[in-house]
Image 1 (spheres, helix red, strand yellow):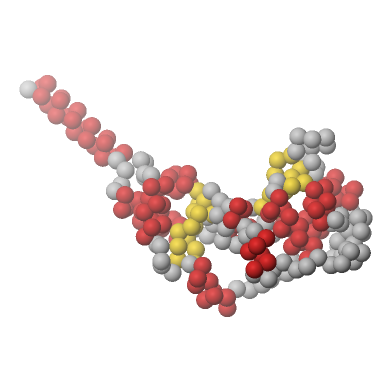
Image 2 (image 1 turned 90 degrees about the horizontal axis):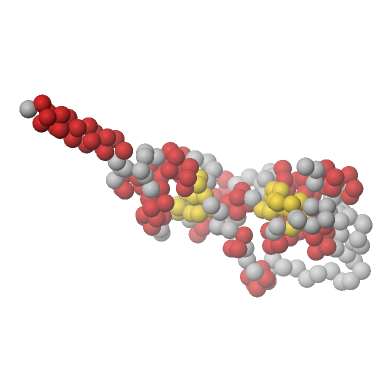
Length: 228
C-alpha cells in the first residue's frame, strides 16, 4: 500500500512539474508578443521576446502568425534589422504627416556623407572623402553620430587600423527598411527625381577646401574620432 502511495505521489509531482514548465498555447504566445511590441517604443529582438515570455515559449513562431494576422491592417508587424516592431502601414503614412515635427535639418554635406555610409558601409573617413571629393569636417560626422543614424564599425586590418562607419538600426527604422540592402538603387532614385545632375567641372570644391557648412579640422578631428 505504501509503495502504491509513493508511486501516486511521484506521478503527481511529475504532472505538476510538467505543468509548471509547459509553454502556453501558441495563441496565447501570439498575444504576449503583440502586447510587448505594442508597449515597447524601440524594436525588440526575438531573444528579448523569449526572455520576457514564459519558459518554453517560441517567440519566432509566434511572430510568424502575428505578422500574417496583421497583413492588410492599419498597422503591420515589421522586421527592422534583427529586431521586430509594430509600425503604421506604409500606405497610411500620409495620415501621420500632420503630427510629424521636423526639429533639425541636415546640411547637404551631412546628407551626402550619410548616403555614402549607407551605400558603401563599412566605410572609413578617408574613403568617404575620396568618394565626395572633399574633406569631411568633424562637425558633419559628429552630427550624424549624435542623431544615432551612424555608429562606429570595426577597425580595418590595414596600416593605421582606421575605424569604419555603418548605419544604425535607428536609421533603418526611420526610413522603414529591413536592412541596408533595401535602399533604392540608381534607377529608383532617378525615377523619383531624387538624383540631381552633378555640377559642371570646376564648380566643386577642391580637395582640402572641406565642407562649406563647417570648418575643417583634419588632423585633430581624425585623432579624436579614431581614438581607442
